[in-house]
Image (cartoon, rainbow, N blue to C red):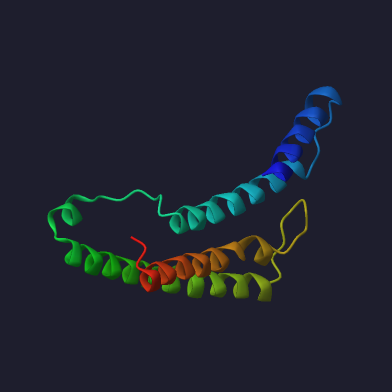
Length: 136
């Protein structure tokens, strides 16, 4: 987050003070925002602070609430594995094979997209630990 703030400050400085905007700052800010957003989703999932509708669990007894939460966590694990881990790894692989690079920074886009399977693995880890430790 600090790197992104410094990057944006540099962009503002070069654009308004020096009169010649830096060519890489916009792209770097965009990629840093992607990483922060996707890692933030994994963090929120780990802290169990995500948005949830709790109408059904409130009407169930304690034992059924635990079973429902385990079921929901299993669905989340399956989705994260299929969409984020497997899909993310395929995206990283394809962009790596095609040697796609960002226009200004010339970094491989596979580095930018690598956060998708990383975040998926973190969410799976958090959900498995919730199931194992029954921390609901």
